Length: 297
Image (cartoon, rainbow, N blue to C red; front, side, top):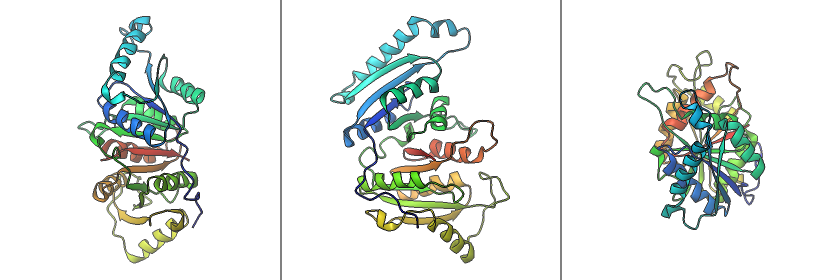
């Protein structure tokens, strides 16, 4: 098995950026950002971007009034009792979302971005919120995404971390980060691998039966990826199941009582045609019963 970082090493989380859009997931995302700020004694930036809009709203968005309105809204949020004694700085800027946030990340050496997700609609198309999806797809630092439905999970501690693994993805740095995070919280890591037919699209495979040969082959592939058990303070668990990857991951997270899902993801620029892995990540973020940490490889 490949070696991960030593247990005594901690993940670097000293500067956190909470990206807010004042949507329904703000409360859950803010609560988690405050928790991580306290646990890691980190500094916190709370950022809102006033984005350009199409007519008839464009004139207002580009006016000083739009920034003033955002500042007033931010002030009301920060005046609440839950923000008392939290070391933070608010940032409000106008422009396109990711270029603005990328500058904030670079200027302040951000180690972790926390963002809210909006879930999915009745057609099950992914509507994380365009902002959350833009952040997850573009950020090179870890992104912790939380929806209103996962409120209360991970806020009182991280005891179980679910890590979905795709054997085709080299995730050495993401797994090393996960090991350090688990050790810092004395949490157990549960690795889950989903079998599916290679000839079928990743998100829409037929259900497969896992026979002994397939199970042994899958375990052999995973043994080359998963860090050695000695690198964890608590013995990790490995689960292999078949089905639609996003559905299996969410179901296992629910069944295992996961406080956090840590997903290694490969950066896939728009238009490349490599959409299936992002469909899986997006659906997991939308449906997960707990926050989801995406780790770019």
